[in-house]
Structures are given as structure tokens and as C-alpha cells.
Length: 214
Image (tube, rainbow, N blue to C red):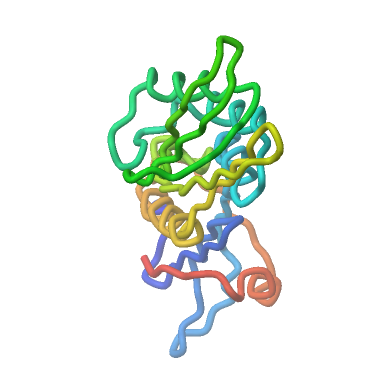
């Protein structure tokens, strides 16, 4: 974008595209705003899996599969740094449960599951907060976003249901897009394609998007 930018250039973005208008019209200098570069925002598979798992009740087996799938991106449990063994051990302990007797929250705000396993009875301790960190967009896999998630557990017959909630995900995604836009301004070695569109068509699609002057 730096290759083509002018004093009148503006960047618009929403949750699907980043668009640079190189001849954006100004009050004292009319133009057609018809020279632009457009980059679609492509979500990573990891983020798609993560987002689809939020605020839905996951049965025991589905939750265990989710933990194992996202294990490389879990960086903390209850605010403390987690290693691979912590996460895998938690997943294996949950997978081994054959019958739930009770679920309680202990004095440390962690969950304690009293359950039966193949070898007898056991107590499994599960963190209340899980922190993930991974790339949201394929456009820049080096740009990582951290998500703090609260876990809710409830008994459901002889098994349990898990629900994950990320309270500020919209704000985190908005900030990630802003950072991606700023980084994209430095991609001046990458060839940009310039297209022409009608001014009114652009504003129909991006009338509610955010703008950054460059």
C-alpha cells in the first residue's frame, strides 16, 4: 500500500476486508475514490474451531477433543503458565471418567469432579480459566491474539457438559484487525493490484467500516 499511497489515501476495514482508497475525495478536492487495493481477511482453521466452541454446551467427549485439538495454543491455566503435560494430563483425566458423582468449585475457584474411572474412584481438578494464544488471520500468522476464557462445568446424568465463554472477544478481534492494518502498511515490497469501482458501490459495502488515514 505504501507503493501507491498519496496524501489523500485512507484505509477502511471491517470483519471481512481491508481496503485502501488511494484517491479518497476531500471536501476541498473532489475525486472519484476509484483507485483501491482490497485484501480479504481469511480466518485460520484454529480460530474457526475456537470460535465455534464458544458459548455452546459441549459433552464430555467433545470437550476432551477440543482440549487436545487446541493444546498447542493453551498458554495458561488459571493465570499460571501451562506446559504441554499439564494440558494433556487434564484431557486424559477427563477422558478416563466413566461416571460423574458430583462437580463442585473448591476454595481456589477450581472445579473438582468426583467421578468413577475404570480403576475405581478419583477426584479430578479442572481450572476455571484457560488462556489461548494463536493467529486469527491467515494474512499474518505471526500476529497472535490472546483469549482469556472462563470454563463452566455442569453435571448431565453420568457425564458432564462444558461451556467456554470469552467475554471480550469482539474487542480483541477489533484490535487484531487494527494491528493487521498497521502491519499491512509496511508491506510495500508486495505488489498491489489497483482496480476501479464505482464510488457509491464501495460505500454501500463499507459504510459502517472503520477508517484509518495514512
